[in-house]
Length: 286
Image 1 (cartoon, rainbow, N blue to C red):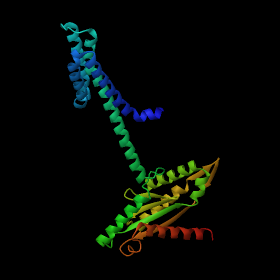
Image 2: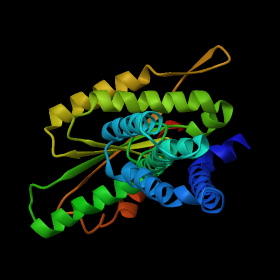
Image 3: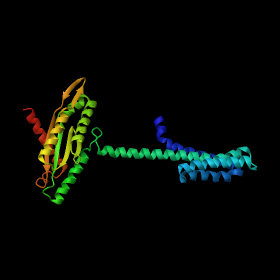
Image 4: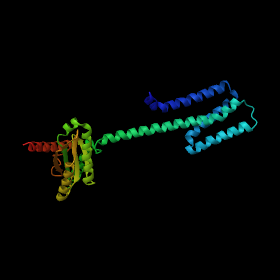
């Protein structure tokens, strides 16, 4: 019930404002007819000022209105009963305060909806564990790169795709999901720290990371890859006080004007990388 109220409090605020305004006008029309016109005008001023004046000016406006009303009703010669004086003094500040409440609740609701939209947008583009771009983003990036290769026809334009796969990751996932997530995040952190800033790193699921690189010197590529392999090789999977060494498989494919038709889409690329990984599994267990 508390959550339900938290969700509908903006609507409750509007209902309260409408109910108070309706009741006030009804009572003044039936019981205090002498001040009905004045109350109507003050009600309108109170509500309009909420949406016209900034918060600071609105606060001072309400304070000055209360002071002016009290001064006029108490010091001036007014032939009205005390109850009618109180209604006139309190109408505009009270409705203005309710208007401020509704406005504030509306701002909170708008902010919450905006945050929700941002979160949904973020989670559809980024893997929640690794904080890396997901498979869909990887596919869009690769296909955009392929379009550039086809469009420009440059012999120099080359994209290198490195696949790093955590072997047997599904077994570790079933064993201890919390530790599985920690290891994935640690691998991702190593890649973010040690790969080049202009490389695009994605997590495509099933323990596989893709790294898209521009054409690099062979010595530089080997140096970076060696450093990454050394770092992720130090990551341990821990369960019930026992440390497990992890195994990784690597696949690499360059795409340029010579073979772009063979790898014209992301599926062709990933199928090729999977075949490379499967071959490495066979070699590993021979």
